[in-house]
Image (spheres, rainbow, N blue to C red):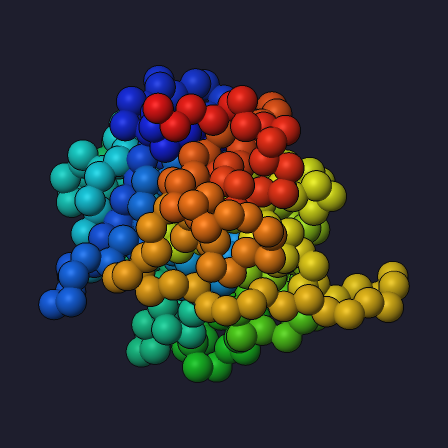
Length: 354
């Protein structure tokens, strides 16, 4: 299962194991503004195993998409990667030059963007956009396909995502939202990457199409034996797709666990409240909302940043203690704090605040 590394240990990244596709250590993405530094992603660590489906969830503004774009090295000023490592196939993506990173994209790690409508060129036919991506990111030692070979390759890619060959001749505006997202997926798998980052691939789609898109993504991932980092906020969708779930709040991971553990026994109050807010057809219950709003990343409260919204009873001084991410059981990591974890005393021996 996916694991996270305690914050105190994150600068010292362990060597990447053969079964680990992507190792992220102490990753930070900051934005410099006239009012100060916005710590959008602050010291996030986790590992993604080969063939695993890892989902990042949380409210809007928690840092999910910022983390995904940072891993792809697509962050733009005033944002910048402020620290950490992201090791893919033995190389640290953060230390690569722009040209080296360009070669990694699509070939080793690909992005399915959040808004396919905005990511496709409106004045180019679909087939040309797919073939341009292949040619531009093809390994140097691999010969470029001729026109007939490229046409067959584009048709095969469209078929893998459930689209007819004639789609290659169309412009993006002639496609539905679901078809645009499938084209984006075809581009993402065109060079068989080992890691696919899917940034809310079902946003702005109806529920039927959402299910179809996720089924297609799962089928493609299994065919490539690729790892998927899914960014989203739909807990119901995540429950059906992911192997492992990481919950982010205010730029940090607060809990990482296998999907069954996360939904049956979340320890941190924030993921517990997220899960309780999901409507169900199995029983009639009152929907529970999370009180308050996320704090401004420019002015985070000291100590446990979730404490002002936590429904638990705790002493004021408990909220001032900086929580630490620790492994409470194999594969289950929690940011321990008396203000946010109801069973804190059960795991208190795991926390060293010295």
